[in-house]
Length: 86
Length: 254
Image (cartoon, rainbow over all chains, first blue to last red; front, side, top):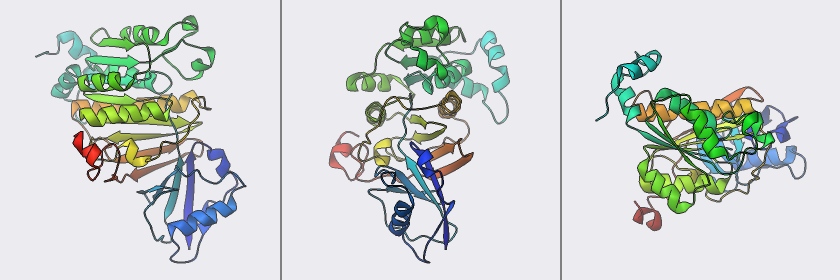
């Protein structure tokens, strides 16, 4: 199944070159998707543990600490790295 | 009770009407106080929007002196203001926009006590600060005072907007249980700062004028670099150190 990937916030240039979709086994979990993503990004560019994680508009926590979740084909995985004002 | 003068009604005539503000809503704005913490790239446009819309009292807090790199986004600054204290210079600019609004300036970053004291005077707080420590301080003050918080953040050509209804929707500490390390000087283009600041101001106006649907409990992610936008429905953390219903310390402060 395919899950679309959006990486935004601080460091979004690190997402350049990543596929727009992650191809995962049916019934894959959020943790499995994050592991698949980590394998795609260059060393040292993996999403920060404080990145906010949402699936199809539903907030699940941070990369470090989130609710378990089973993904469905067509879901949107959003990772938003911390930002501030100024 | 303040009323709107004929001159004020003339000033605001373009924003009073169906689907915008009612006369009563405009009066609500006049009776309101907004605290804008940092009036730079994000907070400057936010404060501008509030002043032009007729929020009766706008308090801006911003320390330091205006420097050249500020002028890529801090719309309240100017070439003439370089080297001058930002708070009073920005306040003067805001006062020049609307004689019907009282603008007050605090010339430094708020500490915990000041943030709470000003939060208790405010009807809405706009968090536009460049550090997580300051954003969390404003969040804490908003929760403690029971005042809505509008938080805007940015990086590069992206940004986010969160609106918090204390103890009813997720607060910033629900989103970030561990305060992220964050550099205060980061790349940003003024266009995204102004866009986020204006949207933050608009959310505050909706809250104060009791019109429209404030974005409570949601996060609006705007990635202008990739021309993408997302809405995230936020989850309140019952164990949140700041607002958690199952956190005895947070509950004791409610």
